Image (tube, rainbow, N blue to C red; front, side):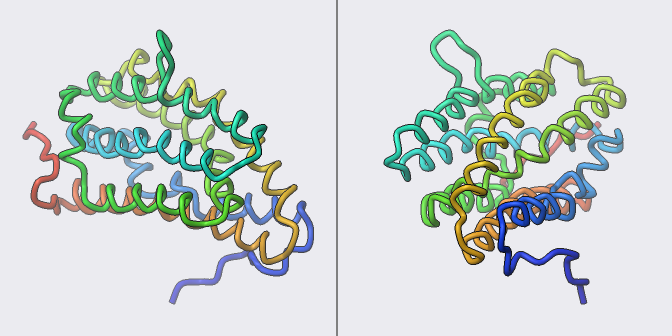
Length: 251
């Protein structure tokens, strides 16, 4: 039987209590704790396993602006739409301006993956597709408050980006700084986004039930991220690659 968490998402009476529990959720459930990330950052994976991670993660990256466009569509408040809109530009870029998706493709290309194959998403794991699509459906179907709350994993993202940059550059001779620009850019973008989202949920979650819904939205998002790594570990560490998924070349 699993132990109960050290925090409760119920009966939250204040915005400060809400923030405290959100941070406890991140400390207990963020995917930086997953064994796959520890292998990745510690230099314990081979090149094919790193390729599989980057390939599958691309589906998440290219779905983020779709998710954010859905979030924008949930609000009639112009100020919120304007505030959220820069997230689309962060990932999609703009005319003559590189975005996060292009930076991720620099990573996959630098790891030796064909860009057309990556963009096709043909080789991703079934669980990757199901988890990421579930995230898009969540922000479409749940309340606007929950849609914004689900983005709060960004509170914890800078630490994992710092670990990833340092660990991968230190341990893999096939990784160089020029292909790690996605993570360097997110060191600035994620905190800015997290500050707005945290302020929004603290201001607009008025009741204990709404604060509980905010916490559960963050838990859902941590599960989305964790499920993707579970699938990667099962396929590429334990060796159970499903039919049709990317198969690393021997050696």
